[in-house]
Image 1: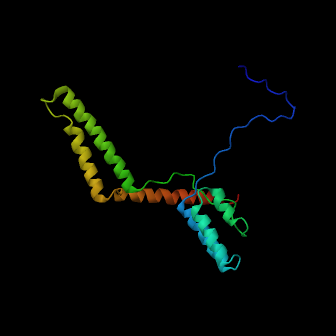
Image 2: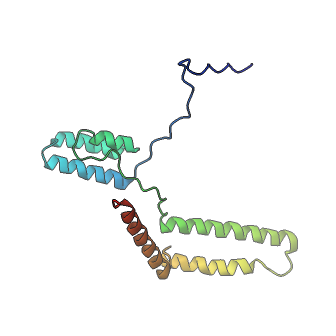
Image 3: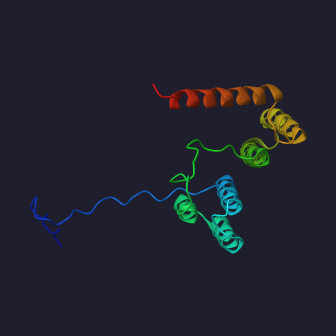
Amino acid sequence: MPDAPEPPPGSGTPKPTAPASPPLRVSDADREATAERLRQACAEGRIDAEELDGRLGQTYRARTAPDLVEVLHDLPGVPSAPSVDPEPTRSHPRRRLRAATASYVGLNAWMVGIWAATDIHGYFWPVWTLLPGGIGLITAWIRGGDPPHHLARRAERDVRRREARRGRDRLPR
């Protein structure tokens, strides 16, 4: 079946456009900031306690930035959308540790499988991937998944530098 011909330019028929990007999801910190703003508005007498309860429920159910903007739409001094950090958040240390453990187990199971399929009565060469990785993994589990101190200090320094750079970029020129 042939495609329908395009309307001539200026005919007034709009062309289909690409769908808009979906609204950004909000974090717990965004919800807490909105809840704090609502409590402040209640303390100022802008909303009463009953309305505060309703709006707080709406705030904690919010999933996207427009949901939070809707809760604050009639309050003064409210930004158009909650600030969303474009940088990805770092995963929790325990989650990283579980992922590393799964990778370690998967890789070494593969190595032992190759060894078993090719030379089960010969030299156990997977020991060279099992030992160093296992020692590192055990050390990480003992530390609780936190990076070594020098890496943590470096990460904190990088965050401070990035924040300082952001602050300079916002200054009027």
